[in-house]
Figure 1: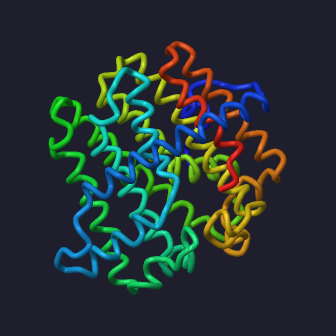
Figure 2: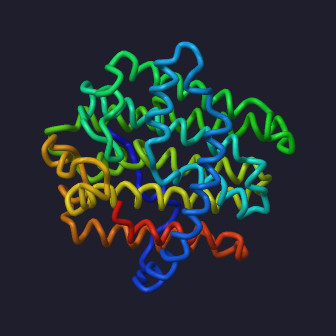
Length: 322
């Protein structure tokens, strides 16, 4: 029997809403995300092995998916959390880039016929459609491995102590393993076509998506010397927005624009996947996402203005259309 508590994951209850604040902070978040994406993209180009490196096909496949676009949300969250506790974005850039490599590996593998069997990703044919299933699997493996190379080498992160690098790397690895993201993926796979309860749905969303998002925020804080109290607040913030992000993804699979999303919509319904709209309906799902975002803002009250980007990104979540 599944033993999972949403309240334990989030840390406390929530009951608040503010559409106007969401909208205003969303506007500021767009600028921060745009600038952050440019910074991360430059880092990716400087840190990723050249696509002409032998054997070329696997490096080309890695570049194909990694440079296909994307919001770069996870590395930006590493940076924003680092800055929230007084860190320098340049000092954490290699680690931030590593989280995008991790995210891209998950997308390549998710798209495979054995899992979601998707033909489009970010408006382009999926990796296995271009390079074949075998190379796509290996390209995903290579991206994950390269991510941990970046996390554990000191080049570009000389100002961060080995102890912090080790702790953050362990944090990330734990979030990705069988008791984290992979576990969520497995339960999601097993739940397809079956009626599930709210507890199982929350487990899938939090483990499949929330763990990596929360880990990015925690790692940013760890790398830049967050105090235990600050790290606890960042962790609770990450727990809330991680779940909110996946709920909005569920909603967009029904209401989103295929061109904006860069992939087909309605696939969750077609595959009879466990989603919030399927269990609660669209209106209630959006309300839950908005409540989670507002609750996440409360977690940042003890910080100064350096957490503004985190707050703005959180409110942008419920306004996003892609």
